[in-house]
Length: 546
Image: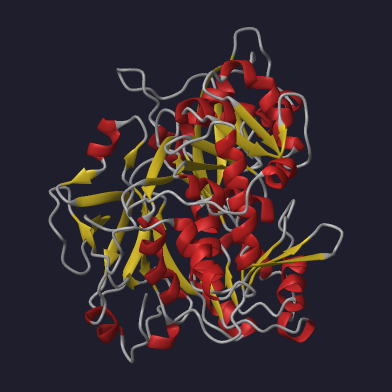
């Protein structure tokens, strides 16, 4: 944890990692406080009907232990992968804690995933169990016969054909559970991250990933925890942003968390929620902040108590930075990382570490640099790739089942990010752009390969390529270039049909908002699409407006 300092330099020089030989996420995020202060408030869950559930650390500890016993009674053991397909809810948090207590590996999955996206991730991870709701269960039913490793289904909405009742497991389980004696490097969770080609990769993290996040989250939130702090994020807990930038670090630091399921992000409702609960600390991705800018006079209309806002996932931009200062009365602390190694650069306005257009300075405990192709750290002003030196507690263990991809992620001891950046004379890092084909849209990092595979499954599509098109709100939108199948005459109806095909088979954030039908795609001699040429043919959003 960070100790308060008067300057950034003092903060860095005074920091040392102290991660014990026995470390478990459930112990850190729940059991420790449950033992000392069982009545301490941990989670405030706003139900869809407007009523409120309040959970203490002691209650979370008891129910998660009962759930862990229930899962173990049905054969789950250390090392098993357990998929969690759930929205923000107490059941999601309880499931995470139970999985970590077992020494199993949590595989969080977003509710918006369609059956194709789920099929790949469940099969690739070899998930032995899945905890989901009735909506998720309906998706799994379509692919259940293809998932040979999946032997246990648990439904939070009650028992169903082939699925056990979540509440019944808890009722039958003992309140006493002797958690697995895990160490910092023992596997705890696997979060899938999209690559530029092929299918997504499972980034496997050890229990130390939580400890590794704490300095960055504390820095971005002005030495969290402070008296009266209360945390909220609109980010899905299935993503690293919601889970590791908000939920688990806040609970570990003793800061209660507000949870609420947004079917679709609504800036007015977001401000209303912030005001209702007197939220003091929020992790809000840049796209959501840009949407909140459309709400006029927020401080006059809503009784806000915000102390800090942290933002990450894409570039915040100077306009949003300035808007927050003027209209919200605080400086958004931008920070940076990726699923494989997160929260390694951060801002902290209270320490004077804040600069519009910059993604921060290295967080204490992390060595970050802009490097060249040879792994040499570049001088200020030189553009290169943002990289993080190993060993680092927040860094992933490996890609699941992809040793070559793991090896190629490194240049010597530098873990490459695939992001181009420039460091200035004062040590701030400025994001320049991707050096690969990742599409960044509304805070999500999207690989084109999965979208293209889905497009090719449509009978009207012969060839397809997906690229990012600049967008002032979402950073980028997905644009698809499609060569129609023989005999197919493209029209508006087909365009809609293809969009819906991707939206329902993959997820709502991956479907192409624009489609262009073309006679051919630019290909290399080996048959790979040259996406760079497609991107170069797209006018920027500004040029399009002109």
